[in-house]
Amino acid sequence: MKRLIVGLVLVGLAGAMPLARPAAQGAPLDPWYSVQPKQSVDEPKVFTGAFSIQLPKGWHLAPGRTNTIFSVTQHTKKWETLGFITLEYMRLDSPIDPSFMTALGTRELNEVKIRELTGKQFSSEVKSGPLGPIIFIQYDRPGISGSDDHVAQYSIPIGTVMYRLVCIAPTAMIEKYRPLFSTVAASFKLIKAAPSAP
Image (cartoon, rainbow, N blue to C red; front, side):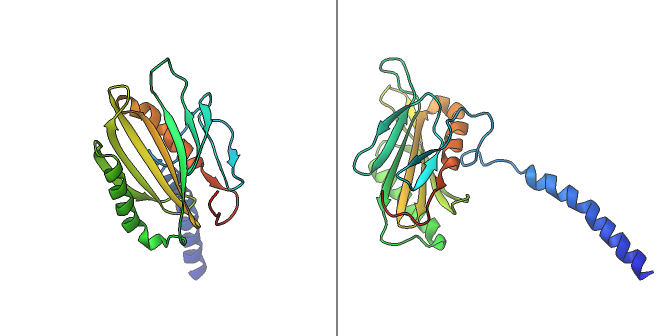
């Protein structure tokens, strides 16, 4: 009798396992921080020997200076602005303890608000990802073409470096750019552990 009960329990568990997997696999993707399907990005490019990232196909790469590693911009007509991505970095005194990320997110948001005096609809949240927690900030601001731009900033602390991936597109078109920005941010991968400033 005991063998029969044990056998039924094992069969029941085996039957339940396949049901649990699709639910986990079917979890919705984070719309702002995950690799989204059918996005036109290049193969991963390694920068400074510290990280790799996938950038939009056909966009123009520009070198950085001071605390900017690079920028990429979408090809447009003369005087038209569309998509723009830049990666900045800042040296940290020490690695960030993950338990301080919420407080750091508040500080990052306040610093953005000070710099972006005409910004509006600010929001900030801590997101989880393969590199650990990151700070995601987004807001709208007046763009140089006369309409509003939407800014999505990913603050990614790794070792003693804070990377800030800033993605900008016209607010009216942000749903078109969101999956692309999400994919670029989620493609950011570490090449070597705990990098120092580039």
